[in-house]
Image (cartoon, rainbow, N blue to C red; front, side, top):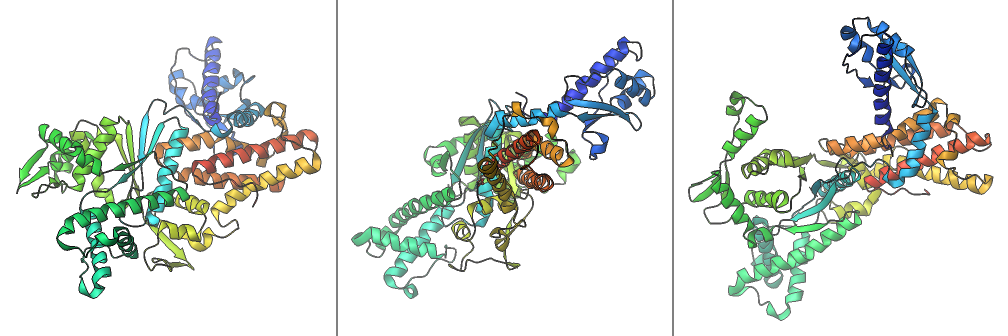
Length: 586
């Protein structure tokens, strides 16, 4: 089955033009044997046709004739019968303008009907394994609105890649080891001591986590510990280890619940601690050492990041002079105290993805503040022979600005802290959050307007798109109940009855969906789908406001009803890709 009819029509223009050239050559009107690669484009102005070929312009020199003479010979020998096109015309200096016919428009409706919720799918990723790692927030506190944006970006990218045939794995990397966990346990311990002795009698660590959630964890721990807790004593390290595990076992399920409420399910929650405990991290660093990429200095083990980055940048085409001007620095892998750094664990984790688990591509959604980390990690993987420069893809995500009454909102009214994901979802729907967070490309900041997110009018983009879907559902239900009309099969629909500018524009918009999915996957950019859905909803509203269905001649009414239902199907399809529901009533 042909799915991408935009591409199929473009390819058919090339085939028809080549066949016309061969017939013209056989008739002696054009020289034979020329190899010509003209472009096929979609004109912005439909008065210039639906597709335009530059074959005559590109081949004029090789054929020894003026472009218009070449184009005329092609038009004279063009055979359109059985094709997607009704006519071809010579235009301008030698363009061939092709106009689509009812065969193509009918094929669009038929393809949508046959493919159903798989419309827009392809097999370009067949046989390729991709991991998408996203959110991966520290489990030391609640997730915030930055995590909310990363969540929908990662989840939507994964869904789009699945639609394109990739074998996709969603993963959350849990930082349950290292400095932040030490700080986490110290903070809980200090709050336990304060609850036991009084806040004024035990100092809270300056670098500790000060949130109310730490106090809640301390209260919960003391309740669980019961009579075992005697106020610290000599077993402080053992207490802090127990507190860390209690905090993680409390916080991680909360994070999972928040993300489930947000419509996100992971295939795995991968624990950083397993890299340390299994010896995999140490083994990874030994491999780098064996390849000559580490050295010792001041009691620490360093990665020759400078050498790795120079190798990477030269391979990417930078000149030696450009590379020499860069301010490159090496990284510590193992501190003098014997503890491995976060960067060392990150290298091991990504080796685990690419080598041990065999993913062809690892995609990470990171905050823009991690920009400087990207090339260094890719280069380290290059040093391990894993081609990190190509197989590790980092989607950097800009900040979220939360607005209400036109003013920035930085603190939760309820808790007095930075806005948590669960607080946001108390204020706005999951659909609104997911649509707005995915509506801008990742490299653009998001202004999340709380007032706009809850409005039920066309200014709210998610309402605008969902309303188009609900409007069609109500239309079909009403026509079925009042007129006895049912949506016809594509085979029983006269596509020739759909001939107004609004009808043809809507069908062309429906045909673009597979291409939009492909571009969104190529660029790791779900906002491509959002923009498409908003445009499609607008095209439907213009069609429906201009044309009646009820009371029209049966053939016209049936064709328009089929067009409306095809639009409903594609709207639902696109909304599903970004994890937004398609309501039947609003």
